[in-house]
Image (cartoon, rainbow, N blue to C red; front, side, top):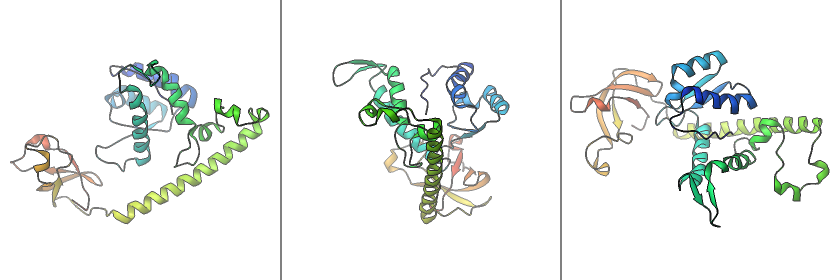
Length: 253
């Protein structure tokens, strides 16, 4: 996990320099990047950069939580953590009255996150990535000083055990999530030309109070499939063309 403070107005070039100086220089070229649809990552510059590096880019689809549930959950966790630093503006006072510039606290947040055990892998991010856990101040009171600096063979053994355990935990987590998904989910069997009802849950520009709206609109005819469970529908004349978008389908609606 790396935290890179930047401005919303950052250019593609500046973003790429941040990426080089803080990610590639320490971790190497990633095989895949999971991101939202920020224009910086969909621009021609970044598209060409991905091709040159051989990196695959995977974007989240709006309202499609199955894209990568683990990544989405991690992002939500980080948002919750960072929100506590940013909630009061660029500077804030803690409970003891000290004034902090929140950006200066990011390294501490990064260290805390990377040395915390994760339920998916059963290990810390640092141990899985590097093969050892960084020495924390609290460790000086818990560990023998002779074992603070492990030998190369110790590091290799710890890294191997961490990778093996992480692989087992990932497999168990994947199987657990699959069982939960299969237990309640039924894949839609719609085809082009079928008429479907569309949930109004994610429409924010409909008229009238939200609580008074119909739960579903339609029926509408399916024009084409965008992906397996996202389709384009033909709206009837009574609805504005502004509502024309990809609709996620589910057996439930």
